[in-house]
Image 1 (spheres, one colour):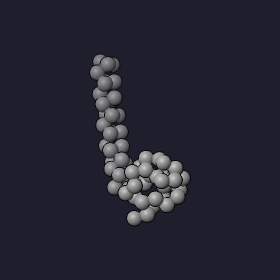
Image 2 (cartoon, one colour; image 1 turned 45 degrees about the vertical axis):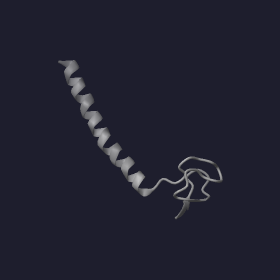
Image 3 (tube, helix red, strand yellow; image 1 turned 45 degrees about the horizontal axis):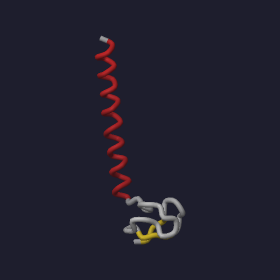
Image 4 (cartoon, rainbow, N blue to C red; image 1 turned 60 degrees about the vertical axis):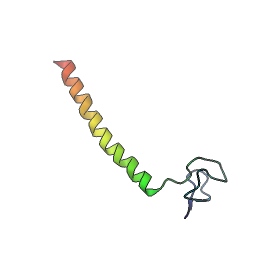
Length: 61
């Protein structure tokens, strides 16, 4: 499938390891990768905030 390079915006295959025009690695971010990135972010952020809150409670008492 042909997609747009995220850097130079030329057409590139979604299976290409790098863009033949500008040479950027992983020129196409697939929808699955984008969704997984957001899921990791949405899970990691609340967990880190909870951890910081618990650390704050431990240090205050």
